[in-house]
Length: 200
View (cartoon, rainbow, N blue to C red):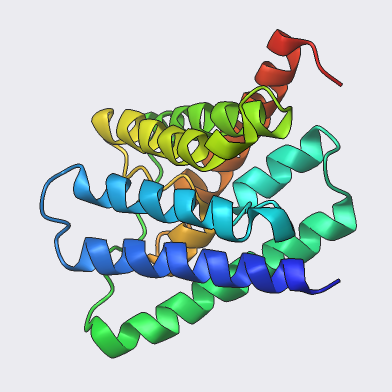
């Protein structure tokens, strides 16, 4: 029963840790961090997807809750596991990273919209897997690609392109911009896809 929560903890730890490490190291090319995050997520879709569904993102969990694909109590447990994974990533990264790579930003409506829009496209892609429109063997590619698209969209409009409240927490950027905006984008992305393809 608790294996899925452990899977979420491990997956969120891995995603948060690689993003923390990539950002702290400068990330090299502008596309490096989004690409690393997308590849990591794609890998975990295949490895822990059969166990937990591989949310590893509170915004995704709350989006799935909004379309009744997960119960309220399950959502709370998933989010707790995800936040513990992010916290573990912070603690482990302190061994390798001397300073925190990001600091919280003041509210900016443009950034809020960019993070929400990026998460919308990310979760719109996830919804195609949830509702079986994307082939199962392609799920990792579809979800990883959707994350890459979402991060690039958010980044191009001037946001950090985090799209994940747990990763924002790990990056010391857990403001309304990077926690509430992704949840709003996630809910709208799932609901819009459900409406478009007319599924239950």
